[in-house]
Image (cartoon, rainbow, N blue to C red; front, top):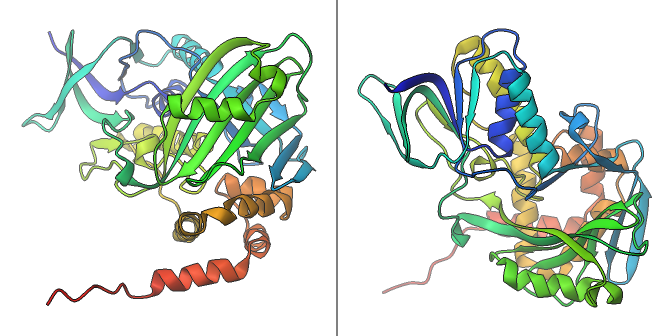
Length: 389
Protein backbone atom coordinates (compact mmCIF):
# COMPACT_ATOMS: atom_id res chain seq x y z
CA UNK A 1 0.00 0.00 0.00
CA UNK A 2 1.36 3.43 -0.97
CA UNK A 3 1.84 5.60 2.10
CA UNK A 4 0.54 9.15 2.08
CA UNK A 5 2.20 12.17 3.72
CA UNK A 6 1.10 15.77 3.86
CA UNK A 7 4.73 16.83 3.23
CA UNK A 8 7.77 15.15 1.78
CA UNK A 9 11.15 16.85 2.14
CA UNK A 10 13.65 15.76 -0.49
CA UNK A 11 17.18 15.90 0.93
CA UNK A 12 18.40 15.93 4.52
CA UNK A 13 21.08 18.58 4.26
CA UNK A 14 21.13 21.90 6.08
CA UNK A 15 17.86 23.16 4.57
CA UNK A 16 15.94 19.90 4.82
CA UNK A 17 16.92 19.16 8.41
CA UNK A 18 16.53 22.77 9.53
CA UNK A 19 12.94 22.73 8.32
CA UNK A 20 12.37 19.32 9.91
CA UNK A 21 13.62 20.46 13.32
CA UNK A 22 11.34 23.51 13.18
CA UNK A 23 8.40 21.24 12.40
CA UNK A 24 9.42 18.92 15.23
CA UNK A 25 9.22 21.84 17.67
CA UNK A 26 5.68 22.83 16.67
CA UNK A 27 3.11 22.44 19.40
CA UNK A 28 0.28 22.09 16.90
CA UNK A 29 -0.26 22.00 13.17
CA UNK A 30 2.72 19.84 12.21
CA UNK A 31 1.97 18.04 8.93
CA UNK A 32 2.77 14.36 8.59
CA UNK A 33 6.27 14.57 7.14
CA UNK A 34 8.72 12.23 5.46
CA UNK A 35 12.33 13.20 4.78
CA UNK A 36 14.05 11.26 2.02
CA UNK A 37 17.86 11.21 1.97
CA UNK A 38 19.98 9.23 -0.47
CA UNK A 39 23.01 8.95 1.82
CA UNK A 40 23.39 5.82 3.91
CA UNK A 41 24.70 7.81 6.88
CA UNK A 42 25.70 11.31 7.90
CA UNK A 43 29.37 12.23 7.79
CA UNK A 44 31.25 15.23 9.15
CA UNK A 45 31.44 16.71 5.65
CA UNK A 46 30.33 20.31 6.17
CA UNK A 47 31.06 23.39 8.23
CA UNK A 48 28.78 26.38 8.67
CA UNK A 49 29.77 29.72 10.16
CA UNK A 50 27.87 32.88 10.96
CA UNK A 51 28.10 36.10 12.96
CA UNK A 52 26.25 36.20 16.25
CA UNK A 53 23.78 39.08 16.23
CA UNK A 54 20.69 39.81 18.28
CA UNK A 55 18.46 38.30 15.59
CA UNK A 56 20.65 35.31 14.73
CA UNK A 57 18.92 31.93 14.86
CA UNK A 58 20.15 28.53 16.08
CA UNK A 59 23.02 30.09 18.02
CA UNK A 60 22.84 27.18 20.46
CA UNK A 61 24.15 24.87 17.73
CA UNK A 62 27.54 26.60 17.71
CA UNK A 63 30.41 24.53 19.14
CA UNK A 64 33.00 27.29 19.02
CA UNK A 65 33.04 31.07 18.78
CA UNK A 66 35.95 33.39 18.06
CA UNK A 67 36.18 36.82 19.68
CA UNK A 68 38.88 38.08 17.31
CA UNK A 69 39.28 37.85 13.57
CA UNK A 70 42.18 38.49 11.25
CA UNK A 71 42.52 39.48 7.59
CA UNK A 72 45.78 39.70 5.65
CA UNK A 73 46.44 41.23 2.24
CA UNK A 74 49.47 42.58 0.38
CA UNK A 75 51.68 42.45 3.45
CA UNK A 76 49.13 44.19 5.69
CA UNK A 77 47.42 42.50 8.63
CA UNK A 78 44.38 43.55 10.64
CA UNK A 79 43.20 41.86 13.85
CA UNK A 80 39.92 43.07 15.34
CA UNK A 81 38.00 42.32 18.50
CA UNK A 82 34.54 40.96 17.68
CA UNK A 83 33.54 39.92 21.21
CA UNK A 84 30.21 41.74 20.89
CA UNK A 85 29.42 39.77 17.72
CA UNK A 86 31.44 36.53 17.79
CA UNK A 87 32.11 34.48 14.71
CA UNK A 88 30.39 31.13 15.33
CA UNK A 89 31.13 27.63 14.06
CA UNK A 90 28.77 24.68 13.51
CA UNK A 91 30.30 21.37 12.48
CA UNK A 92 28.49 18.96 10.22
CA UNK A 93 28.48 16.06 12.66
CA UNK A 94 27.09 18.18 15.49
CA UNK A 95 24.37 19.61 13.24
CA UNK A 96 23.32 16.19 11.96
CA UNK A 97 23.34 14.65 15.45
CA UNK A 98 21.26 17.48 16.87
CA UNK A 99 18.72 17.21 14.06
CA UNK A 100 18.35 13.46 14.42
CA UNK A 101 18.01 13.70 18.21
CA UNK A 102 15.37 16.42 17.82
CA UNK A 103 13.33 14.31 15.41
CA UNK A 104 13.53 11.24 17.66
CA UNK A 105 12.43 13.22 20.73
CA UNK A 106 9.55 14.92 18.96
CA UNK A 107 6.00 13.65 19.28
CA UNK A 108 5.12 15.09 15.89
CA UNK A 109 4.66 12.77 12.88
CA UNK A 110 8.08 13.19 11.20
CA UNK A 111 10.08 10.31 9.73
CA UNK A 112 13.59 10.30 8.26
CA UNK A 113 14.32 7.67 5.61
CA UNK A 114 18.00 7.19 4.78
CA UNK A 115 19.37 5.44 1.69
CA UNK A 116 16.33 6.59 -0.28
CA UNK A 117 17.37 7.57 -3.79
CA UNK A 118 14.56 9.43 -5.52
CA UNK A 119 13.97 7.96 -8.96
CA UNK A 120 11.12 10.23 -10.05
CA UNK A 121 8.64 12.85 -8.86
CA UNK A 122 5.44 13.36 -10.82
CA UNK A 123 2.18 15.17 -10.24
CA UNK A 124 -0.97 13.08 -10.26
CA UNK A 125 -4.28 14.13 -11.75
CA UNK A 126 -5.69 14.60 -8.24
CA UNK A 127 -3.08 17.30 -7.59
CA UNK A 128 -0.91 15.22 -5.28
CA UNK A 129 2.70 14.20 -5.90
CA UNK A 130 4.00 10.70 -6.41
CA UNK A 131 7.57 10.20 -5.26
CA UNK A 132 9.22 6.98 -6.38
CA UNK A 133 12.38 5.72 -4.72
CA UNK A 134 14.38 2.59 -5.42
CA UNK A 135 12.42 0.72 -2.73
CA UNK A 136 9.04 2.41 -2.32
CA UNK A 137 6.43 4.79 -3.69
CA UNK A 138 5.00 7.66 -1.63
CA UNK A 139 2.20 10.17 -2.11
CA UNK A 140 2.50 13.75 -0.84
CA UNK A 141 0.30 16.83 -0.81
CA UNK A 142 3.36 19.08 -0.83
CA UNK A 143 7.03 18.78 -1.71
CA UNK A 144 10.00 20.78 -0.40
CA UNK A 145 12.95 19.95 -2.63
CA UNK A 146 16.28 20.85 -1.03
CA UNK A 147 18.48 18.73 -3.26
CA UNK A 148 21.39 20.46 -5.03
CA UNK A 149 21.30 21.08 -8.74
CA UNK A 150 22.07 17.90 -10.61
CA UNK A 151 24.25 19.79 -13.09
CA UNK A 152 25.64 22.96 -11.48
CA UNK A 153 27.13 24.30 -14.71
CA UNK A 154 29.68 27.09 -14.44
CA UNK A 155 27.55 29.43 -16.56
CA UNK A 156 24.64 29.14 -14.11
CA UNK A 157 26.27 31.61 -11.69
CA UNK A 158 28.12 34.88 -12.12
CA UNK A 159 30.92 33.59 -9.90
CA UNK A 160 31.69 30.52 -7.83
CA UNK A 161 33.13 30.04 -4.39
CA UNK A 162 35.16 26.83 -4.55
CA UNK A 163 36.93 25.56 -1.45
CA UNK A 164 38.98 22.62 -0.28
CA UNK A 165 39.78 22.14 3.38
CA UNK A 166 41.53 19.83 5.78
CA UNK A 167 40.87 19.47 9.48
CA UNK A 168 44.02 18.43 11.27
CA UNK A 169 45.56 17.85 14.66
CA UNK A 170 49.18 18.75 15.37
CA UNK A 171 51.58 17.36 17.97
CA UNK A 172 52.68 20.80 19.13
CA UNK A 173 50.55 23.93 19.71
CA UNK A 174 50.36 25.90 16.45
CA UNK A 175 47.08 27.81 16.46
CA UNK A 176 45.47 30.70 18.34
CA UNK A 177 42.01 29.39 19.30
CA UNK A 178 40.73 32.90 20.06
CA UNK A 179 41.35 34.26 16.53
CA UNK A 180 39.83 33.14 13.25
CA UNK A 181 41.68 34.00 10.04
CA UNK A 182 38.88 35.01 7.70
CA UNK A 183 41.07 35.79 4.71
CA UNK A 184 44.82 35.49 4.17
CA UNK A 185 45.10 36.56 0.54
CA UNK A 186 47.20 34.59 -1.92
CA UNK A 187 48.88 37.13 -4.22
CA UNK A 188 49.99 34.30 -6.52
CA UNK A 189 46.48 33.29 -7.52
CA UNK A 190 45.42 35.04 -10.74
CA UNK A 191 42.02 33.62 -11.81
CA UNK A 192 39.97 35.67 -9.36
CA UNK A 193 40.66 35.78 -5.63
CA UNK A 194 42.36 32.99 -3.69
CA UNK A 195 42.83 32.99 0.07
CA UNK A 196 43.47 30.84 3.12
CA UNK A 197 40.70 30.52 5.75
CA UNK A 198 41.68 29.16 9.18
CA UNK A 199 39.25 28.03 11.88
CA UNK A 200 41.36 27.11 14.96
CA UNK A 201 39.40 24.90 17.34
CA UNK A 202 42.26 24.55 19.84
CA UNK A 203 46.02 25.19 19.89
CA UNK A 204 46.41 21.72 18.37
CA UNK A 205 43.43 21.49 16.00
CA UNK A 206 42.12 23.58 13.13
CA UNK A 207 40.22 23.52 9.87
CA UNK A 208 42.24 25.13 7.07
CA UNK A 209 40.58 25.87 3.76
CA UNK A 210 41.82 27.30 0.50
CA UNK A 211 38.98 29.27 -1.08
CA UNK A 212 38.63 30.76 -4.54
CA UNK A 213 36.18 33.40 -5.78
CA UNK A 214 36.23 33.01 -9.55
CA UNK A 215 33.99 32.86 -12.64
CA UNK A 216 35.20 29.26 -12.91
CA UNK A 217 34.57 26.29 -10.65
CA UNK A 218 37.61 24.55 -9.21
CA UNK A 219 37.85 20.88 -8.36
CA UNK A 220 39.27 19.56 -5.09
CA UNK A 221 42.37 18.10 -6.73
CA UNK A 222 43.18 21.53 -8.19
CA UNK A 223 42.71 23.36 -4.90
CA UNK A 224 44.66 20.84 -2.79
CA UNK A 225 48.14 22.00 -3.93
CA UNK A 226 47.04 25.63 -3.50
CA UNK A 227 46.18 24.86 0.11
CA UNK A 228 49.48 23.04 0.67
CA UNK A 229 51.44 26.02 -0.66
CA UNK A 230 49.83 28.31 1.95
CA UNK A 231 50.53 26.10 4.96
CA UNK A 232 53.38 26.75 7.39
CA UNK A 233 56.53 24.82 6.57
CA UNK A 234 56.01 22.29 9.38
CA UNK A 235 52.54 21.46 8.09
CA UNK A 236 53.76 21.23 4.52
CA UNK A 237 56.13 18.55 5.77
CA UNK A 238 53.11 16.58 6.94
CA UNK A 239 53.68 16.92 10.68
CA UNK A 240 50.02 16.49 11.60
CA UNK A 241 47.21 13.98 11.83
CA UNK A 242 44.60 14.42 9.09
CA UNK A 243 41.11 14.19 10.60
CA UNK A 244 38.96 14.85 7.55
CA UNK A 245 38.62 16.85 4.33
CA UNK A 246 35.80 18.90 2.87
CA UNK A 247 35.10 20.40 -0.53
CA UNK A 248 32.38 22.48 -2.10
CA UNK A 249 31.48 24.83 -4.93
CA UNK A 250 28.85 27.44 -4.06
CA UNK A 251 27.06 29.69 -6.56
CA UNK A 252 27.65 33.41 -6.11
CA UNK A 253 24.94 35.31 -7.93
CA UNK A 254 22.97 32.36 -9.29
CA UNK A 255 21.63 33.16 -12.76
CA UNK A 256 19.22 30.24 -12.83
CA UNK A 257 17.99 29.61 -9.27
CA UNK A 258 15.83 26.55 -8.86
CA UNK A 259 12.20 27.67 -8.60
CA UNK A 260 8.67 26.44 -9.21
CA UNK A 261 5.41 28.05 -10.22
CA UNK A 262 3.46 25.37 -8.37
CA UNK A 263 2.80 26.39 -4.72
CA UNK A 264 2.61 22.72 -3.72
CA UNK A 265 6.22 22.14 -4.86
CA UNK A 266 8.91 24.53 -3.63
CA UNK A 267 12.70 24.51 -3.83
CA UNK A 268 15.03 25.43 -0.99
CA UNK A 269 18.73 25.29 -0.19
CA UNK A 270 21.92 26.54 -1.81
CA UNK A 271 20.78 26.34 -5.42
CA UNK A 272 17.45 27.99 -4.70
CA UNK A 273 18.94 31.19 -3.27
CA UNK A 274 20.18 29.86 0.05
CA UNK A 275 23.71 31.19 -0.44
CA UNK A 276 24.43 34.93 -0.24
CA UNK A 277 25.54 36.09 -3.68
CA UNK A 278 28.51 38.18 -2.54
CA UNK A 279 29.86 35.90 0.18
CA UNK A 280 28.45 32.38 -0.01
CA UNK A 281 27.17 32.55 3.59
CA UNK A 282 24.05 30.43 3.93
CA UNK A 283 23.44 29.20 7.49
CA UNK A 284 21.45 32.14 8.85
CA UNK A 285 19.55 32.56 5.58
CA UNK A 286 18.46 28.92 5.70
CA UNK A 287 17.52 29.14 9.40
CA UNK A 288 15.28 32.16 8.77
CA UNK A 289 13.60 30.42 5.86
CA UNK A 290 13.05 27.24 7.91
CA UNK A 291 11.30 29.24 10.63
CA UNK A 292 9.02 30.99 8.13
CA UNK A 293 8.31 27.81 6.17
CA UNK A 294 7.42 25.78 9.27
CA UNK A 295 5.07 28.52 10.51
CA UNK A 296 3.32 28.71 7.14
CA UNK A 297 2.93 24.94 7.00
CA UNK A 298 1.40 24.97 10.48
CA UNK A 299 -0.99 27.85 9.83
CA UNK A 300 -1.85 27.54 6.14
CA UNK A 301 -0.75 24.01 5.24
CA UNK A 302 1.52 25.15 2.40
CA UNK A 303 5.33 25.44 2.27
CA UNK A 304 7.16 28.71 1.72
CA UNK A 305 9.90 29.00 -0.95
CA UNK A 306 13.31 30.44 -0.11
CA UNK A 307 13.12 34.01 1.12
CA UNK A 308 14.09 36.63 -1.44
CA UNK A 309 16.64 39.32 -0.66
CA UNK A 310 15.38 42.90 -0.54
CA UNK A 311 16.03 44.78 -3.76
CA UNK A 312 18.73 46.97 -2.24
CA UNK A 313 20.72 43.95 -1.06
CA UNK A 314 20.42 42.20 -4.40
CA UNK A 315 21.57 45.39 -6.14
CA UNK A 316 24.55 45.80 -3.83
CA UNK A 317 25.61 42.17 -4.24
CA UNK A 318 25.24 42.38 -8.00
CA UNK A 319 27.37 45.53 -8.15
CA UNK A 320 30.00 44.00 -5.87
CA UNK A 321 30.22 40.85 -8.00
CA UNK A 322 30.62 43.02 -11.11
CA UNK A 323 33.54 44.81 -9.49
CA UNK A 324 35.15 41.47 -8.54
CA UNK A 325 34.68 40.15 -12.07
CA UNK A 326 36.04 43.18 -13.86
CA UNK A 327 38.69 44.25 -11.34
CA UNK A 328 40.05 41.01 -9.87
CA UNK A 329 43.41 42.58 -8.96
CA UNK A 330 41.65 44.90 -6.53
CA UNK A 331 39.62 42.16 -4.84
CA UNK A 332 42.05 41.55 -1.98
CA UNK A 333 42.12 45.25 -1.03
CA UNK A 334 38.34 45.48 -1.24
CA UNK A 335 37.87 42.68 1.25
CA UNK A 336 40.64 44.03 3.45
CA UNK A 337 38.91 47.42 3.61
CA UNK A 338 35.56 45.78 4.23
CA UNK A 339 36.75 43.81 7.26
CA UNK A 340 39.06 46.51 8.67
CA UNK A 341 37.19 49.81 8.37
CA UNK A 342 33.45 49.64 9.23
CA UNK A 343 32.30 48.83 12.76
CA UNK A 344 32.25 45.16 13.72
CA UNK A 345 28.49 45.44 14.28
CA UNK A 346 28.01 46.78 10.76
CA UNK A 347 30.04 43.89 9.33
CA UNK A 348 28.19 41.26 11.38
CA UNK A 349 24.71 42.50 10.55
CA UNK A 350 25.57 43.08 6.90
CA UNK A 351 26.96 39.57 6.55
CA UNK A 352 23.77 38.27 8.21
CA UNK A 353 21.68 40.30 5.70
CA UNK A 354 20.19 42.48 8.45
CA UNK A 355 22.02 45.84 8.62
CA UNK A 356 20.42 49.04 9.84
CA UNK A 357 20.56 52.08 7.56
CA UNK A 358 23.45 53.51 9.58
CA UNK A 359 25.39 50.23 9.37
CA UNK A 360 24.73 50.08 5.63
CA UNK A 361 26.11 53.57 5.21
CA UNK A 362 29.23 52.55 7.14
CA UNK A 363 29.77 49.69 4.69
CA UNK A 364 29.29 51.97 1.68
CA UNK A 365 31.61 54.62 3.14
CA UNK A 366 34.42 52.06 3.58
CA UNK A 367 34.41 51.07 -0.08
CA UNK A 368 36.35 52.91 -2.83
CA UNK A 369 33.52 55.01 -4.19
CA UNK A 370 35.00 55.91 -7.57
CA UNK A 371 35.52 52.25 -8.45
CA UNK A 372 31.92 51.32 -7.60
CA UNK A 373 30.40 54.39 -9.24
CA UNK A 374 32.33 53.72 -12.46
CA UNK A 375 31.18 50.10 -12.39
CA UNK A 376 27.59 51.19 -11.85
CA UNK A 377 27.85 53.58 -14.81
CA UNK A 378 29.30 50.78 -16.95
CA UNK A 379 26.40 48.50 -15.98
CA UNK A 380 23.87 51.13 -17.06
CA UNK A 381 25.61 51.91 -20.33
CA UNK A 382 23.69 50.46 -23.30
CA UNK A 383 25.35 47.42 -24.83
CA UNK A 384 26.66 48.00 -28.34
CA UNK A 385 26.47 45.31 -30.98
CA UNK A 386 28.61 44.97 -34.06
CA UNK A 387 26.84 45.70 -37.33
CA UNK A 388 26.39 42.44 -39.21
CA UNK A 389 25.62 44.05 -42.59
